[in-house]
Image (cartoon, rainbow, N blue to C red; front, side, top):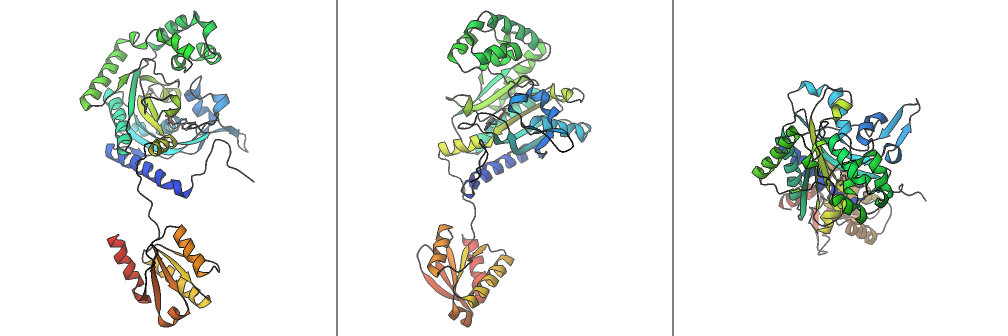
Length: 421
Ligand code: AMP
């Protein structure tokens, strides 16, 4: 028997109400803030993700799904959403539009990770980006949007952590200080952190191991190393957030491992839990577009994992609107009645009434059982007598009450029900 590949899942019909709910909230949030939908391919030139992943959160060699197509072109499944959006921004000359350009996306992302609760090899992200202006008010807007998104979903008990990781000018000096601090503790570092010290020292700060956390506690703080411009930018972001009434916690150990992040970084998640529970994160990436071959262009954005959001909706027992179901199930007995049934189904659908017609040669009892398991409220029963008298039996599936109605009145009866229901 085949199974879905490890770390991937089927989203079954009974789960779809959650997905629709989250996707609709995402779309209406973006509509509210004037962010437009951009859909990019599932795979890209693998080099596109190189700046994204270099020594960062996603290890290019280990975590990316890279393959060669038949022409020998090296492609990668989308590992994250920001680089493809920036690629499209450059490819379609969106820099010629008045800036900033505001875009959002919803789609799958692929990372070859060790699957566990809340961590999969294929997951889905909703993200949005404001590209083309370094205004700190945009950082505040993007953070406010994240908060409004989670609140609109009905989620509570999450917090926003905020930090600034500086720019090309000030970050290298900080990294030097960080290296110096950690170098005197190398013997006590976990194997991952030993590698981080060489490749990506910023990530030393968010190691979850208790022994490494102790070393992080006494590490120098990035905020003491910011250049005057980054300092002023960070202050402005905080002032805007305060003006907007957005609660946040400064966390000088918050870093985002991707190379292209500059200045603002932030993360939203449940207050008490660890990294696996982070709902979303984002920040400013003023180096990315230049790394992709464009002119230096500022950008700020956010991405959230939809599976993790749904886990939290379930954990917090948030009531989700049910998906609409067909209004009636049409059952028949005998070949003559079957023709009448499938014709009736077709005519009702023609007038916009959703119905399911029975199929096969189940007993009437079997057909009603099917209607019941589909959760459909009404059944229309057609037998030989109904064919002859041009009627149908309308059965209320909950009460079992039945009445005979003329065939010609079925559509109008359901139209009335649809209006009142
Ligand atoms: P990132 O692109 O790593 O900043 O991820 C953005 C968000 O996507 C995270 O905050 C998570 O909610 C979600 N996410 C990231 N990686 C995974 C994964 N492997 N499985 C499920 N969700 C993920």
